[in-house]
Amino acid sequence: MTTVRKSLSVLLLLLLTAAMLPASEAEVLSRLYRRVVSLEQKYDILQSLALVEDRSLDAFYTGVLDDLLYGDLFQYKGDAETEPIWDEMVLITVRELGRYKVLASAPMVNDVVDRSDDNALVRAEALIALGSMRAVEFAPAIAMRLRNLNFNTRSDKEAAEKEAYGAVVALDRMKEPVGFASVFYASIGWYSRRVTSVAERALADMMDDPTDQLAAIIRDASIYEHKIRALTVGQASRASTDANNRLAVVALAEGHRVTENDPGLRVAQGDLRKEAMRTLIANGSRNEDAIRYLELSARKGFDMDEKLLAIQALGVLGTDPAVTVLADMLSAYNERQMSGIAANNEELDLIRQIIFAMKLADNELAVESLTEIKYSDYTPALERQADEAIRSIQN
Image (tube, rainbow, N blue to C red; front, side, top):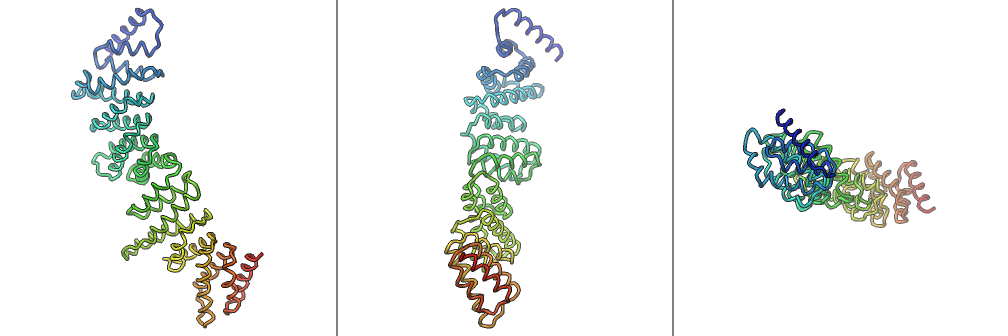
């Protein structure tokens, strides 16, 4: 290699002194690349060219990759001695084509992805180059590639990680909706933190409003923790509050989907419903599509926390249909209390929450059932709470 470098230096010196014409460094080196014969010399020049910033090199790098893949230089791929150099030349070339965003070279770069099964680093670099040049026609194939990697079926985990990293970066740069779900699952996948962290950052950057993609994940995911994760990704996105509320309603509906009587699954569904309701409350949601699900949670929730959250969410919603649900629940408790069936401690907590929610709602439809409390033989403290709610609504 020392002899090669010496001969290369001499050849470069001769070219520079003989040309006697003004030329950029890129022009000189690209001309020299075409003159030298050995693969090692071409590799040395290519390394030097990679340090040069010159957009006029677009056509040069396209020609180099064409020669590496389909021309005279392809003969070096199958040779044990020269294949590592060939791989390095392909890696440098696709990286530079990506840096200069040479979209016309995308089909060739995609060929590198498809034909580099024995070199994950080259494949990853080619994927990143496709992303940099925004070759979006290849986004579906890259998304499918990442989806398959997420299943963790490859025996060579290190190679799979490199490829997954390249696919995530590519899809992030392309910003195409088709890649969102694959990147989402990569962010919670089997990979090391290097891959999951870049996928997490990509989720926040790929789309301003990923609501439709996240809704599909919430409906289709088989693991409820993934559904919850999709909901939290939505809240952290740049989507509007209304869009986030729609997503929360999707999650709430999914949480109420009838399933087998599996205790663990029931807990997971309850967690999803509670996370959805916290979102609706935090956003001050007025989305009436949530009412029927909130009523189910308020009346038949998995635990006390779910029931209390549902009642609060109905109060935050505050529309006539929402307050009617609260009023019907309170009136039912009042009737039982008046008939001599005293509310137990849990029921009293629910009644206090209903009164609090009615005050939040600030809706006249609540006044009648609140007034009934005075005549239902509750504690003086509960009656005072009801009076305060009535005064707040009527003022």
